[in-house]
Length: 99
Image 1 (cartoon, rainbow, N blue to C red):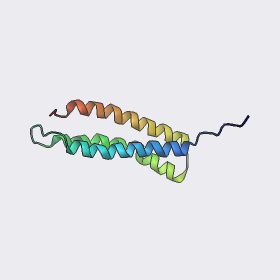
Image 2 (cartoon, rainbow, N blue to C red):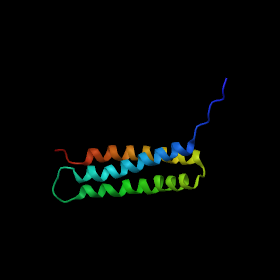
Image 3 (spheres, one colour):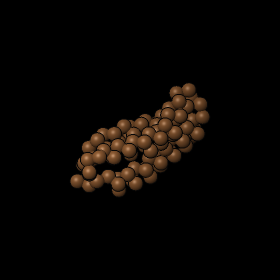
Image 4 (cartoon, rainbow, N blue to C red):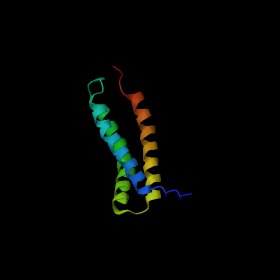
């Protein structure tokens, strides 16, 4: 019987941070293609809460992955960031004008 290899939490944290970063970048594309509602451009205000989630969860995760410290904590921070993105994005989708 062979010993199972331990989970590499640093790679998992990097994957989660990359997922969050790619989703954050995708939101810019999605907001740019939202059908114009009243033409005021207020849909761009959605960038601020999404940017705060990115800055609060994923920038520290990238920093911790880069220096190789606290990989389990970094994984947990990244997962919390993904959950925060999901909650905020669900609310924003209800606010955007429909085509």
